[in-house]
Length: 127
Length: 141
Image (cartoon, rainbow over all chains, first blue to last red; front, side, top):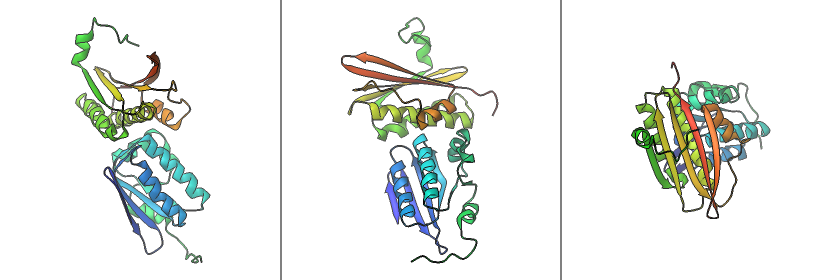
C-alpha cells in the first residue's frame, strides 16, 4: 500500500511478525503532513504495531513534529507500540532542538526501531 | 527594532538583503525554505543553525499563509548582518488574529530562534500581519 504526494512518499511494508514498517521519504511540512497522518491512521485503525522510518526525510516541519506527538498520544491510547527511525540530520536536529527526542521513541536504525516494537513473546492472534 | 521606513541606510542594507514575493500558498513553502537555507549556508552558519532557520522560516510562513487572504501575496525579506540573519514575513489578512503564542508552532519558533516578534497594521479595511524572526550566528559548532 503506498501513499503518494509530489513532495512525500510513504512505502508501507507489512512484516511477517505483524509489525508494519513505513518508509517515509521527501518533505514533511504543512502540505504533506496529512499524508503521514493518513498512513498512521490506517495502522491505528487496524491495531498494528508500526515503525516510521524517517531516514529519507529531507525536511521535518513543526507541523510534522506536532503530528509525531499526536501519533504518540493516539498509539498510547490504542495500546499500540510504535517507534521511529531518525538517523539523518534533517530529522534529528528538529527532534533534538525541541527536546522531542526525549519524549518520542526515537532509534538510530531500522533494526533497533523494529526490535523495540516487535513482539518478544508470542502474541495470541485476535479474532 | 530597526525602523523599516528608514532610508538613510537603505542602500547599504540592500546589499545584504534578499526579498521574495510569492503567492501565499503552502505549495511555495519549499521555495522559501530553500532560499532561507541557501542564505544561511552562504553566511557560513553551522549545520544546526541552518536547519533551525529553515524550520523557523517554514513555521512562520505556514502560520501566515493560513491567515492570508486567498490569492494574495506573501512577502519575505531576509537581512544578513555579520552576526545574525533576520527574516521578516508579511501577509494581508481579513482578520486581526496574530499567531497564537500558546501554540506548539510558536513554542518551536521561540526555541529555534533568538528573537520573534509580531506586528499588526490596519490597511484599507484589511490587516497586514508581519512576523520577524532572527537567528544569531553560533560561536561554535
